[in-house]
Image (cartoon, rainbow, N blue to C red; front, top):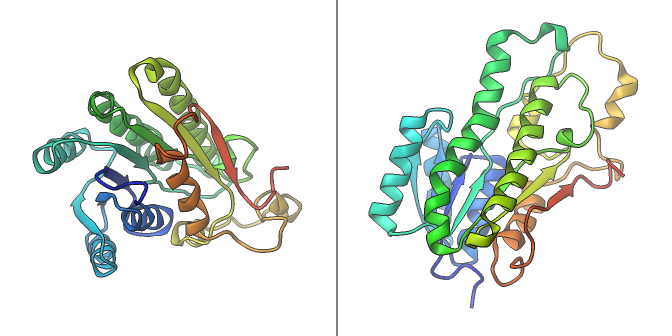
Length: 251
């Protein structure tokens, strides 16, 4: 028996990277996955791949920073599937630059998607997860634990995600909800490749970003841990935890 047989999972940021790997892993283990993102073609490609592999998935376009779209997602999920068992928040954006060069618009965009979007998704999911005794896994970052050079807005947003998750874990534990955080380091995703670096950087700071084991992690490395935490079989006594997946960089 697969760990997620009969479970309904919702994954944001499912069109690529970590979110896509998580959606595919949960589906592979038996979950029916509702995949969310703003990139229509790539999102459909994720669903098509899951179905080609024998899994069950559907998709909806959703900007997690837009509360109307978020509410629509949950209405759709309950109408189509009748419940929600697992929420994984992986949608995120990043922009690397000197702190003094981050514009108001860039700061707000990163906070809106990474932190406020995660809050919107969690807030709407909690009543349904109370009913199913389900759980939340939020994708944070090692930048929430250790300073990220040129990533002030991203680090602030992910620090908020980690704190938000712990608060949910404490407040709703007696109602049967678990909430945990995964903090990836350097992972081979399009988001990381497109984050860029500003000019005139201090190269002595770059080892704080690069993995000390000599290679960049894969999205599947993160998805494996997410599946464990989301599983009632293997993660039932894990709540409010913060797990690092970074090849030892923060040690």
